Length: 267
Image 1 (cartoon, one colour):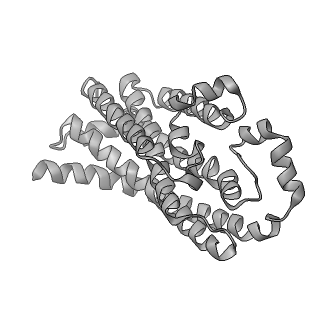
Image 2 (cartoon, helix red, strand yellow):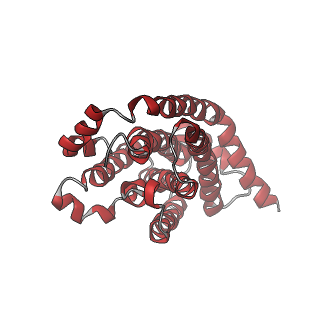
């Protein structure tokens, strides 16, 4: 019981340190999402916008837009779910992951935390619990605003919307836990940020360009972005295979992070 309490204290401490992220990121994204859904009736019959998405498919794909921008799913995907929402969640999770072990070790904070009766494995799990708590409000705020969008002629299916909401949280955890693992392995917050951001960018480009470039389409399944939003899940729903790939990747990365944490020189 004492160890569990210590792990919970680690989670609460980190959440207290990042309480502004729990408030301002979801609030800012909610305002943006409300603007997007409120603007849809103005653009839904815009033939020029529809033509732009049809005539410039590669350019649109680069920004995560697939299909017609004037359709409800195309509009929400292009403006929220294939780019902006994942970006904000990744800012939260990758930034926290890099700081959770490597950053706190560089600052001398982790040494104090390590004096608590908590094992390295429990320490990693406590950090990931905080990471998940930081990621959920951003995705949940977007979900609520898009749901409100049904009053603005945006009839997005609730089941698919719930699935994508959960999938984007899992996407954030994939790269957040990767950042934590790299930080534990290298002992460097900067390396964790740089390596993870580079991999996330590459995966985003693979997912977004897959519909437009043949050779990229052939390797699309290596991208967590494809599993979460890239295959049109907002319209068709997130499949069990997509969820399994995301959860399986997270579990593997957690094991790697725990192994790296056990070898860390905490000071």
